[in-house]
Image 1 (cartoon, helix red, strand yellow):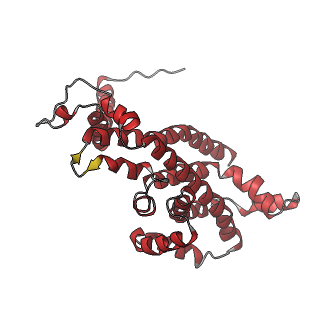
Image 2 (cartoon, rainbow, N blue to C red):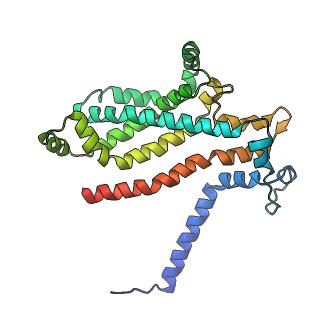
Image 3 (cartoon, rainbow, N blue to C red):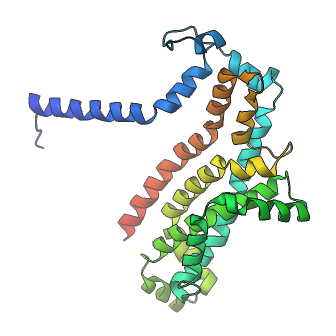
Length: 281
């Protein structure tokens, strides 16, 4: 076993690389860090100019948004979880078989895929009025299923494009081998394509969940009380008497916890699945 010793120059370069990485990460996450720090400040510390970096932290803002305030932030977070999870799962269930049909059987690949992609490129505000009228007609205003459908529609183009791109990389010979063993179309999709697609499934899951979680426009337009998401609920601390910056920052900080947990949970599985796929290939 040969052990190579690092020279002082190599150690210096290694330290500089890590310093540059930490500095860039700090700059990119500065808005999030500023929000988290603000959530632990009192109103006096927040309004101090110039801003103070050394202060006595307080949990008063979190107590206000969770227990003593006029808003129900916990319900807003639960609503967002249900909306994002429902929209994500529904979009994946619809787009995965559709992607397989487009790639293997050329169903709508020349016109449906570009159409869905181009429709998603349009500003969502264009659909606000017709969707509001349709939801009003069928009774989906201010409901979690209604917003989950909106999240599904928003996620379908991205999920479809990612699934199509991944399935195109799977050799058709694997389908032929499965047919020889007696598998039908659904059997191939379930037992052959689905296990190989675990990396892209986790990637689409995280990406679609984050997209659904961050949706603000339709949450603002289509809800009033029962299905308010956290992105809209965090704005309730902006009143006609002023902005409760501490409470708003606390609500925003709590609002980023669920997608962050999902990302941290899914990341190892994405890495393991990619490695397994590479070894199998």
